[in-house]
Image (cartoon, rainbow over all chains, first blue to last red; front, side, top):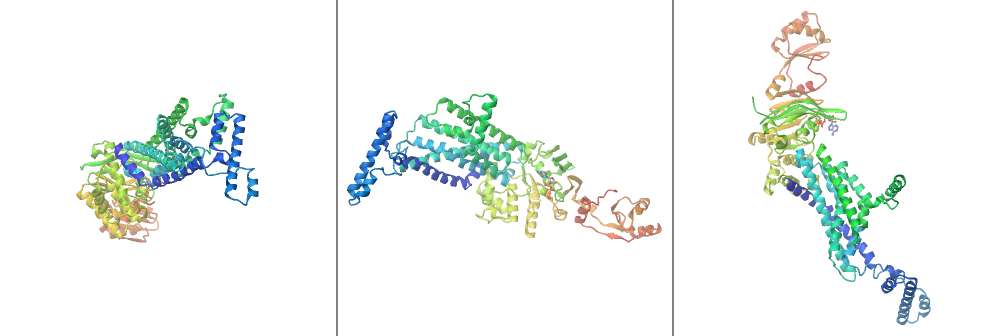
Length: 321
Length: 306
Ligand SMILES: Nc1ncnc2c1ncn2[C@@H]1O[C@H](COP(=O)(O)OP(=O)(O)OP(=O)(O)O)[C@@H](O)[C@H]1O
Ligand SMILES: [Mg+2]
């Protein structure tokens, strides 16, 4: 029964236009993020070069090191100025003025120009744009059930409604997984186009990050699915998804946090935001410590589990309209 | 007694401040075409939703006795088109059917095309269901209900939106499914006249209550010819009718009485009334049709002596 429902829901999802459109949108988002990280020369804009930066880190960012590197940057500018001067004779007066200020470079080596693919993938996931797009998919996919009443065609007995709901959630989980892979592929393409070289670095840390971040994304989509199921409204589901993933709630959460700390005497290090899915996804990285990973997984399990149960129970109990 | 497929027992559904279905007892025979007739808001759809497991009764119960009594098992043997057909507007007719076929784990392309042909959608091709006309949607809804070869079919106003030719086609199809495939059919309508062409049993429902349940033959008996007496004040006529041994009569309103028996006695009756000194505006035999009968029993002009 479950397998049949899985096929039916999978087929329904496969006929949705948004499953093709969202990855295209994601491609542009990944491209922009990658461009900023790989190609926008933040250091260059400050008149510094990668070597200076390395020098800074080597010398422990001491005052001396900083001074050195600024001098180096200044010299680089001078060098460049003289290069240009030798190439173009006759405008020496202007060039002499330029010598005082190094020229501003925008496109060049970005901050992560020499980083590996997993690092870029992490950057694309923690920016939360993937869950924003997936919230749209989930809202549409689940909301269609209520706007078209398709349930009444395929389940007539109460007995089977739970299976249908479960099948729907599995399809959502599967699509989030595919989307995660797509995000990785888009990252790979953009790294190949813009970074120094493609360093795959498919080590344990990468696979762990891939898996854990997917679990958080899936739990988030379950929450959106539950909201859509409870309200029977696409709009409600998508809106909640967008609000959660765009950080609009941050203010409310920090106020609630303050109240908790003040009124209930919680440790002032306590942060309510640490227990939201989005914050967990933003914080989790390739080298997260054990307790961060555990917290992320626990939050996913609790939110995802609650959302699944709430959706399942309502969908089973409620009359079909 | 013929074998029953489904009986309901004081089936009731309450919404916040409406009693949509009120202690309904239906007895649906195996192999019958059971017509459910009622005005808008009478509760037809709500009854069907409960019977299809889409809505949970507030109280009372129903039992698919003909399917061994296990309702869960029975649900897998019924097909339903309840209220508007549930279609995915962005999919073709074929794909709409395919979703249901996948969910039921049955059928191939040929099966689907066969169903489409059966309801007259054989050549819609790649047109999206959202672009279908009302009648085409209705036909697709019927095709969906037929997937899985149900033994019991619930059709909620299936001829809604069909053109006259479509009505005939669908009616013929329903009759054929009933006769050839032995499918029991529960069908609802506002129009008794329409149902009377195929239905073998009826329930007339009003404000959630069953007003009467009868076979087609019984109903035709009730719609027989009658004597209509019109007078300024009919209340004085009633004792006279009782006295003369008339029992089957109905007070329609202050000025009208129907008498359903001894139609040939109309002239004698006329004389008796005149003898009693009661002024009569008119008296005579009138034959009525089903629709009139339906309006009468569901209207304010209830049959009972008020
Ligand atoms: N989900 C609901 N919530 C509240 N009231 C409802 C609901 N569904 C139906 N009703 C009420 O129940 C009553 C019966 O409705 P139902 O749809 O069964 O009528 P119907 O006989 O099918 O009418 P129609 O011929 O117009 O289709 C109506 O008064 C309706 O307002
Ligand atoms: Mg109705």
